[in-house]
Image 1: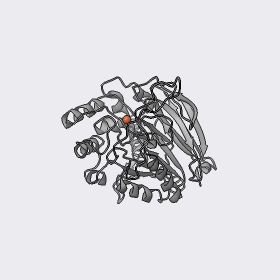
Image 2: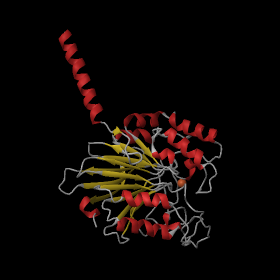
Image 3: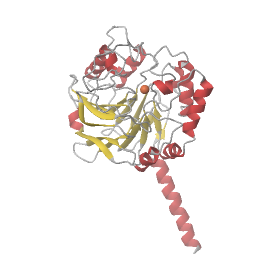
Image 4: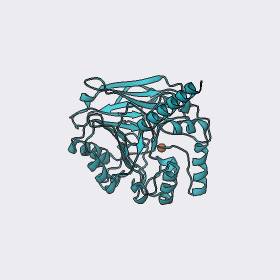
Length: 362
Ligand SMILES: [Fe+2]
């Protein structure tokens, strides 16, 4: 009996140690905020737009998909304040949500921000508390004290997973800290289209979304070897038909993004975006040598009903209820298969676009 118990304890310890060594290892690197991991990433979940004082039942469905990493890509709370004590209290509300706690225990969470968790609706470089808010944000997501994400302006960061042949690069953009003011414009909407949004196209060559330092960083990162590159932008990159916030508010910056990808000969790029309180998958062919996908997932717990929005780049339908995003990668196929998904509050796939790795090469 004693031997059986001893065997059971040893089995438990062995299982635990295997689980530990195969879990994702967070480590410092000369590159800011790098996560290195010898295992291949196969399940990447993501989401945006979480109202911290409302119920968040969707966390359970996300945890059930057993993600290896969760990308929290903006409007992670609705802070909307210049008072850092209020901002911290709102982050704390998220921290205390039992579902979020389960996710935090289940996998690493990598985050960037959008306007509301940055601190102000639709804000850019002019937000007066951006320096302080950056540290509050990085504190919340347990950014190491010596991380360059703490010592440089903006929360952008790069992460790498997997061995050669199965490398996944995650690039989190900061579309707020440096962004020039938007221009307001009442664009004519299509009959029956409903609300279209307040922002026009700003063609000033000085206008920026990323700022020069972040552009230089991105160009460098895109030249590093990887098989898949997930670029998380809080706002939509490809969808361009509406007049809410999007990269298309500054068409020259949107074009620059495509040129930076093209010039770097960067294979494997897939954009993730949020912000919109609806989900859709968009694709365009802007001359980088392969189609660029933008998987928009929003909101985790604040759905909307703007059913009539036009998007010439949309593939399939648009989804309006609570949702999260998922990219699964089947590395076992000769030509690995990527499934870009939007899932509903129960974890069911409601939108999906399948692509092969060979289709994401110039
Ligand atoms: Fe937003």
